[in-house]
Image (cartoon, rainbow, N blue to C red; front, side, top):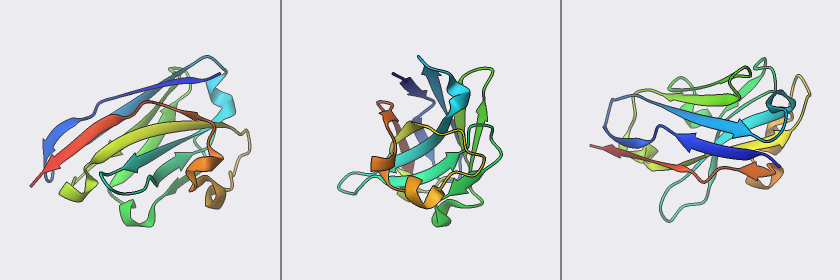
Length: 130
């Protein structure tokens, strides 16, 4: 069992930045690919970003490339999502996810689907005002 706890969400203005954190416990963190998803009111959950066990491979939603950056610190069992130039349409609950995967190049086409991830955090709210 992997327990994931997100933090760092809040209310910001358009153009601001936020860094979300997801702390993992319970299993060997470095054996897991990690991902971030978000879900806005009335919309389906969507893939934001993913990172391989060693940080060597990352993937982003096409619409977010250049504004969001995923990273991880295996010594701290934590994955991060740096979000810059935030827009009102970024308003959503952001959740992190974990999947046992020690491959250097995860199949990100599969991981864009939420059902490919086994463990989930409870989410953190990000609200961007205009």
